[in-house]
Length: 103
Image (spheres, helix red, strand yellow):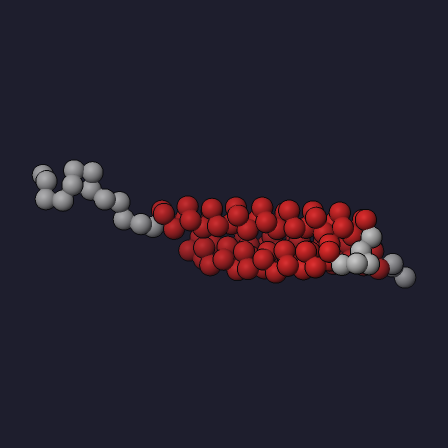
């Protein structure tokens, strides 16, 4: 009978491979909405990690994992917004360098 840790690692590995396959098959036109959804999920992870880290009964190991979760989620959120902004800039029309009405 596998322990809880082994079972959790097994589920984590399967979720990683399934997630990678799903994201690979996403059309490039849908990457911006996908980034918005992952930013929202990361925001939920930040709130959960803060609650776990600040709880009175948290062990030192739990606090370290909570800190790592907060840090990586915030990095993911910031980089997701930067990537989304860059992708949206690609769809904007460029202004004519000569100016309007000039030949």
